[in-house]
Amino acid sequence: MLDTSGRADILSFTTVSHPAPVPADVRSQAIASPRFGTVFTDHMVIIDYDADRGGWHRAQLTPRAPLQLDPATSVLHYAQEIFEGLKAYRHPDGSIALFRPAANAARFNDSARRMAMPELPEALFLDALRRLVEIDREWVQGGDGASLYLRPFMFASEAFLGVRPARQFKFVVIASPAGAYFKSGQAAVKIWVSRDYVRAAPGGTGAAKTGGNYAASLVPQAEGIAEGCDQVVFLDAAQRRWIEELGGMNLFFVFADGSVVTPPLTGTILAGITRDSLLTLLREEGLSVREEPYSINQWRADAMSGHLTETLACGTAAVVSSVGTVLDTEGAFTIGSGSTGQVAHTMREVLTGIQTGRRPDPYGWVMKL
Ligand SMILES: *Cc1c(COP(=O)(O)O)cnc(C)c1O
Image 1: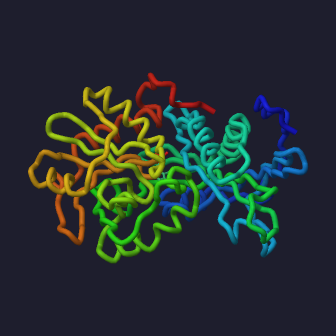
Image 2 (image 1 turned 30 degrees about the horizontal axis):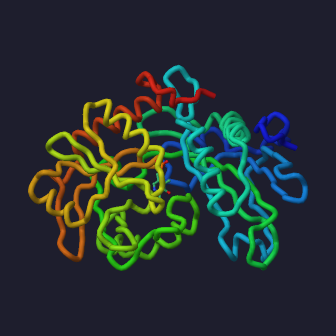
Image 3 (image 1 turned 120 degrees about the horizontal axis):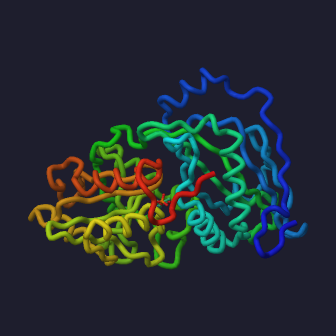
């Protein structure tokens, strides 16, 4: 049992080490050129929740294995599910660090509240991450763009077909070695403007990190891919006028006069931790950053006039990328030279520098294991 002060040590973990972990040579090969999210480490964390058994109770660190689910398991029918994404980095001194994991813990609970799910004490969330990275530490490689991607998630595990919040949940953490996210690596990305579909509506679940938002983005994403693009940009649901975000990344618009705009968090946009970090880092660079609405028509006009010099897409998986070209049924346009811009390059360097321990961390963002 766990007391309400969030003391995780009250919930002790049962640890079972993998009897046959991936051999070192196979692991090295898998880490060398992983396709995002296809290779996984040897272990996982599972913690059970039961409203009728005092809440969070059984915590296990075990060999990674398939989950066995009753066909009536609630999440399979009504999608009561949330997740997080963050990375573990190998620092030059050999230590391992997480980037702002407490922010992920807080956002996880924001998502939980929106989806009528139980909150997980922050200390328990962090303890779970720490234990998994510790036992699979050989999977955390140093070097250019390399990290171990951590995927904490929670789902309704109660076998019950009625429509109401479940009374049983599972919190799980798995880990996957990561390299550069987009196939094209650091090159500028090509974006498709979704005119027929929206991602999130006012009052909906756009601010929660929940699988359903991604499910809704797959058709427009496929449309974008068919048009030769890497990602989709969504407009606001009410007016189809204001730029919101990509399917899984936030946007920043950089202007020739040294000002920067990013869409405000009005409830339809996911509050990215990379976004929040860039707000600080861009201001540190002397740029004047405003959180305010920016329209698709203004984006095109500013790109064509040259007032807009760069557009940055940011998120944990791909860090910071430049948007080079925007494809839209109402006319395509190119931003700057169509390649990676100076601000994007600098922000990527500074942010990954802090994350990987190559730069000092004056903000207290890095948590050493
Ligand atoms: C996770 C996510 C982001 C990026 O968030 P980070 O914390 O920076 O990784 C942006 N948009 C959506 C829809 C997301 O799910």
